Amino acid sequence: MVLEASLILVLVFAVLMAVGIPIAVSIAAASLATLLLVLPFDVAVFTSAQKMVASLDSFSLLAVPFFILSGIIMNNGGIAIKLVNFAKLLGGRIPGSLAHTNIMGNMFFGSISGSAIAASTAIGGVMVPLQKKEGYEDTYSAAVNIASAPTGMLIPPSSAFIIYSLISGGTSIAALFMGGYVVGILWGLATMAVAYIIAKKRKYPIANKLVKKEIKKVVVEAIPSLLLIVIIIGGILTGVFTAIEASVVCVVYSLFLAMIYYKSISVKQLPAVIVQAVEMTGTIMLLIAASSIMSFVMALTGIPAALSDFIMGISDNKIIILLLINVILLIIGTFMDIAPAILIFTPIFLPIATGLGIDPVHFGLLFVFNLCIGTITPPVGTGLFVGSSVAKVKIERVIKPLLPFYAAIFVVLMLITYIPEISLFLPNLFGL
Image (cartoon, rainbow, N blue to C red; front, top):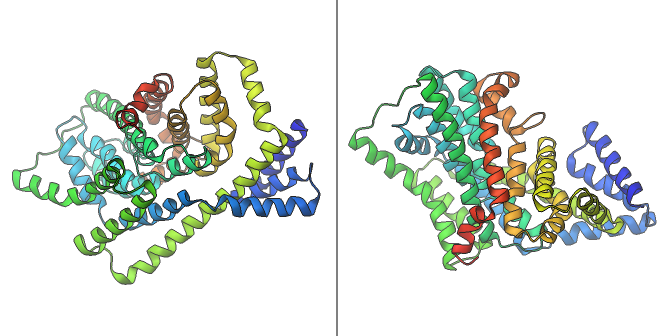
């Protein structure tokens, strides 16, 4: 039964994806086809519909549309250049300063918008032309932008951690957020280290210093946007509001910045912003609903238990099993977006991890970290395609300059995998 179910599930899903069927529909159809092995057609259809509706009946999911709306508001609010100027202030005295500005800009903007694509486009769109103008190689500029873009999906607020919390059975969102700061900043520092070494070797210039008056202006313009992170995390940690309520606060504050403080979005533009948020939310919710059928089917047919037995049969060594899970997740991340990957594979790998005594927060952080790497790796990494497009260079030309960045990011992955105290330090410090 397990072998038959696995074959049908994988084959139907692969065929539907290959012919261009949307991933949510492919997941649901493959799951229904597998469910027909054990249930009559009418019962299978009714059960599938019931599972889809029940999966969306979760209070935690309210945070997703609000954080999405907040990110879109900030993305359309014209704050990218303000964060670029602030990042330039911090990294302006380091060799290859424009590359460091790009990296820090992606970290700041990505954490606010919650999107690697938005960060890569907004920050890279400003920084890549500036780097080319200063004599940086175009492929190097593209590689810096691409390699640092996923930090925004790790540094909170992050919808990926919210989805993981839901699927994992209620892992603390606040703990995931605090751990996300650590792993996201480590990713950014790793890319900065590579950028520094390359800049010293190629003798890339240091940016011109700002005068005192300009520094004050840059800081004043950037602080209100950066305060969003402080307000959200500070409110959660002090108990002023929950992580779900924080998403609403995030929207209100984003509207205040965009419409009143910066005056970059008008009332007439709001409907288009809301429609964009609704479309993105609908896509994610449909994925969650469809994935709930797949999770039910896998549990019913015993696929997770069989896979767990297979992995444990290879080795009972914790180090080997974690390495194997990392490799599998890295491969999955190159072919699948983060949200569906979390929804499908968390129920499979989390029981294995907890069986080894791994903290669910620690596992969630390395799980999402792996999938974030997939967004910037071939063959279908969306961040890789977008970053190459922004820099106007061919993907095959960017891969070689990306290799040292891949190596540095992989080192960070190994550190957070085998030294859980690194990622759990802040959650434990705040008693989460």
